[in-house]
Image 1 (cartoon, rainbow, N blue to C red):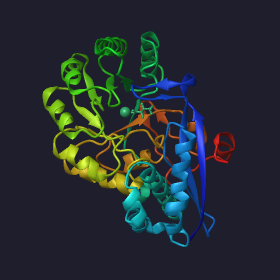
Image 2 (cartoon, rainbow, N blue to C red):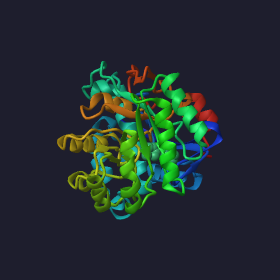
Image 3 (spheres, rainbow, N blue to C red):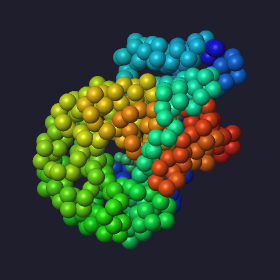
Image 4 (cartoon, rainbow, N blue to C red):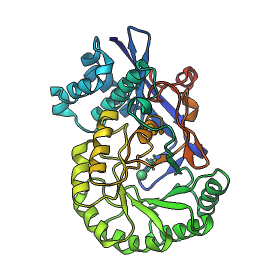
Length: 371
Ligand code: 0YR
Ligand code: MG
């Protein structure tokens, strides 16, 4: 089997109720810059990353896919994905201008498409190719009601509905109001509404500084918060390590880290308790498995960020022993042939061959903005 062609796309898909916000981002559409990798045997692999639908930067990502990495792939057998990953990662231009940001997200999308092809060629869902157990229960936790721009009554209603009506056992809400006391009042209101048994997580998306995080983060214990996510600036190992020792609530982070070398110091410093890689940012499935092994070697649970909209990562969570929970945000379910599904609080096991990333034809027709 040989790669013959790379066809880029950029989907912009509307989010819930016209727009959501966390402490850093206001988002109206979820962006999926991606690529269809075609082969001479008729199989196609689908890969993409996730953005806040900023078209000029989405185009930089697709151009890195086709112009930087594409020439290394044409004529190659996609089933050699680990070998091809290394060739792309070590490509001199990538070493010089890449290894993070735009180029790493392009590499992630390509790696996902290659694994999709490898699993399709094996006629197996990716979790099976990787040795996973279809009976394994991966808990879905829902973030799509916890937004910072929701007034408190809407936040409370949404979190209650997700638990009581939709069957989730866990929800996450955003922090980052101008006054931390307002955040704590919102956490208290949600905890009161969802009862003691449901898990509640909070996420500051890197907004707080260490002083507030120590003073107010300590009080999250009163609401039995499972983890405090990205409390501090994304790259700050030292302050996260200080915070982790100062408060009782465990720390989660990793959604903005680009490779295993960025995870290692956090893990070694004891600065993270829940490791949160995102397959669409840190170099695809090949690199995700590397981070999963690192976390597992330190006996830390892996709870991936939702950035590929769960499609490939549900396969990886089923396959890897360090995972038991995966974020859930349902914005792009209409786009996929086999969309991720949560029933009674847990994901169903995908059945189609591949990595779960195959797009429906009408998704390309409706949402592609790349001309
Ligand atoms: C909006 N999940 C997150 C949303 C999410 C963001 O930017 O995608 O809040 O990525 O932090 O844990
Ligand atoms: Mg987050």
